[in-house]
Image 1 (cartoon, rainbow, N blue to C red):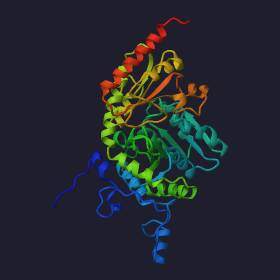
Image 2 (image 1 turned 90 degrees about the vertical axis):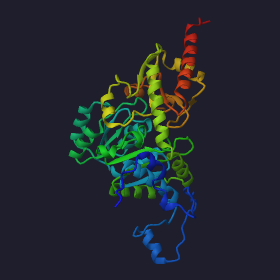
Image 3 (image 1 turned 180 degrees about the horizontal axis):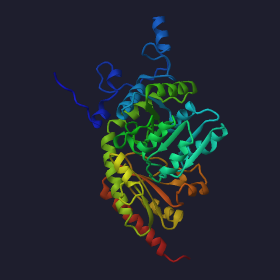
Image 4 (image 1 turned 180 degrees about the vertical axis):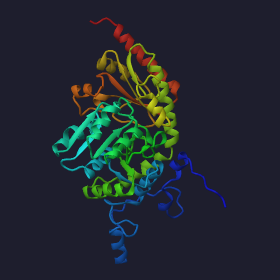
Length: 403
């Protein structure tokens, strides 16, 4: 009898979750745009509608193309179940609103993505939900807050945009002690570089718009974990309506076939860019967990398979220097996105934390001149040469006498 071994993640990215929805001998998942599904048998229709039998009833609930996307992510993350959303923020907000009630308490970190932070600082307090935000990386402080009791422990690691790292295994253990749900935003790491469920998390979510899709042409979000938990989130989503569009699901599926290849090259480029930037005299700080002097390098080395395609740096001269440097780059999009095949630069004040005031960003440890880089899949030599020319222009502008 032939023994089947575990298939590697790159192969899963190509093949997983698709076979069930292939039709007519096609090799690619079809885009099913039908809003409704016909049943001649009234009893079968009812059984599908109430979940006794697999099938599809209405597009706001489920869709074959969307199901294939969900199944692929589920398999890559090693989860029992997954459900998808129209955007990454829909995945985050729907997950939180599914489980939190007035009087509940949530513990998280201070420098999560700006949209997530707004939920913590604006929306949840208005619902009479207590929010405790701890300094990212201060594991003792997080433990103390969790031990006071909480419904959810929410982590984002690496963080956006300062790529700080939280010890998932340690935090998951303390969360379990008080019966908290441990939720991890894995967008920056991707399933290629990190699997939070294996480290003890209950739920893992992604803005699929970013690395999963990889081509900056489709919005989406996804959460996966234990079937019992995901079914509750799915029910909230199906009623509240933040449904993933089937065409977007197809684009995300197509992008995920090259996920491993892309992330490996993006990780290599990010490491190279970080090592270049630390040597530049006009750079104040470089944030990348692959650098040995990164504050959380040892934790990242322990829980990640690769350090990821995201980094950031701050410039001497703050935003005025940023305004000179970024327009000089040739091989870069200056845009509010990340995870794409093209390298993308953006100041935190107009990308990840545009919703926050300068004071709020400073409180999160985000310098005014911080620039986030999403490394693409270009040749590293060209990206460094591009930066070299941009820094030369910046130096010239600073040396020029003012009129």
